Length: 408
Image (cartoon, rainbow, N blue to C red; front, side):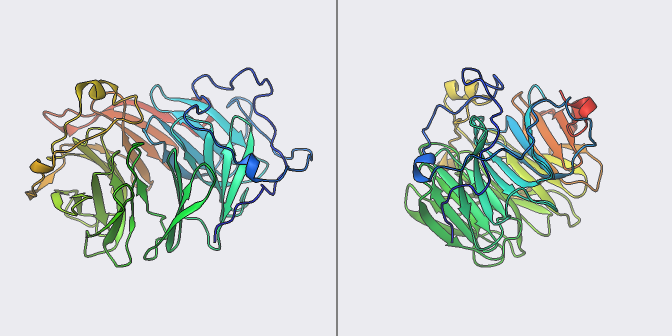
C-alpha cells in the first residue's frame, strides 16, 4: 500500500542559493500548477546535509558513472539519465547537459521528468540505492530537496507523470494518484510486469492509460474521461513494449517475438495496421509515435532503428501543426471514419544501424523527419530520414553524454 510521509533524509542543499535567480534559464520552475506537498507533511529536522550536489560537468574528474535508466520527457525535448551516483538532465536540440545532481554513493534507478518543470520523480537503484527501491520520491529541483514520497510493499518498476497524475507501477499493480495531494484514485491489477510497462496520454483534457491486462498478450486501456475500460488482445505472446500517441487515441504494441508491430484504436480496440520489423525474432526495446502519428520509430536488440509510415490519417489544425514541435500539448486527431485495417504487413521506410549489445530508446526530434536515439552505453544520435526515398538514415549528430570531455 502507498503511504504519504515526510522524507526520511535531512533537508537537501539548495542548488540555487540565490532565490532571485534560476540555476538554468532553460529549465524553468513549472508555472502551470501549484503543488502543496509541504502542507501535508510535518516540518523536517534541520540537520546538516550529507549529499554532494554537482551542477557543473567540469567539476568532477571522476570516471563516468554507470547508467541505470534513461527516460524522455513528455514532449521528447529532454531526457533524463539515472546513474549509480545521481541523475542528469539533457536537452535534445540543441544537445547539451542542462544540469546534474550527484549524491554521495547513492544510486538512482529511475528518474521521470514532468515536461521541463522543476518536479521530478526519483526511485533508488543500483548496488547502493539513494532511496529504498520500494519508494517514489517527489523531488523539487527548485528547492533542491524531496517534498513527498510514496511507499509500496513491492519494488517500484516504473513511474509516469502528468500535470495532474502520478502513475506508479509495481510487479502486478498500477497505482494512479492525484498530483496535487497524492490521493490514491485507482488501483489496477496486471499480469506480472517486471519491465514496469505503462503508458499515459499527455493532453490536459483527456486521460488515457495503457498497461498490461491480466492475460498474456492483453493490454488494458483506461479512458478516464469516459469512465470506460477497454481490453485489447494484441498478441499471442507476452507484451514486450507499447506506446501511446500524445492524445491516447492510438497504441502501438510489440510482443516478445518482436517481428510485428501492431497499431490499434484505443477507443474501439480495432486493429488498424501491422508493420514488420523483420523475419527473425527480436527484443523490442522502444516504440515512439511522431507528434502527428504519421511515423512510428522502433528499436530492438538487433542494433537497428526502423521508421515506419503509418496509414492512419490525422487532422491537426494548421496552427497546431506549426507548434507541434515545441508545444507539449500538441494533439493528434485521427479521423475515425478513415480507420480501416491495412491488410498488408509493411516494411520500414528508413533504417539506422547501431552497435548491437546496447539498449536503445527512440524518439522523434523537433526538426522535421529527424529521430533521436539514446543508448545505455551513453550514446546520443540525431538522424534524419528521407520520407520519399527512405533507405539508410543520415547521422546528423553524435555525443557520448557520460564522458566529461563530450558533455556540453
